[in-house]
Image (tube, rainbow, N blue to C red; front, side, top):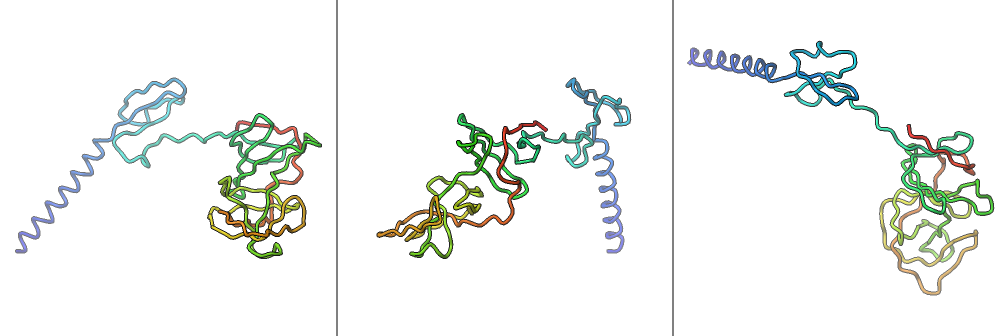
Length: 213
């Protein structure tokens, strides 16, 4: 029995040694030309020239020596150079949809038509289940925007990503006046969370600048 155990251990060690050698032999190396697209096979990554990138085949991706280039983005700045966010898309009437990585929030910016060089987010109504506009504020999910910033009565809010069915009995829009419904409004809504800190200073002064970096 001891002889069998000893032989089994030797076989396992030989198998592991063979597997490691096989893995090393399976690995192949190449040199990829930067900007030229060619690839030549070499015996060692040390044979790659200064204008080539070493590439390893037959090993996990983590073991490869080729670095992944940083992804560039179209970033938005105001007239003073203040960073606003990453451009998502823009509309024909100068509206700009941006994403703020600092707050993980989307901002849909549109110009103030009385001063075309100042940008704000859209004004939206807040709905309440109370009759006097107190308690938890909600934003209608008629347009399903999540993690989206908007303003109401000069305060900025962020719409949560959870949709709830509520029975709204009052709302505020365009002023601080509370409007009460004779008949409760059944709506799908998101909770409106007050944004304590905005990622930029208001108002956003235009013209906006776009940089690919």
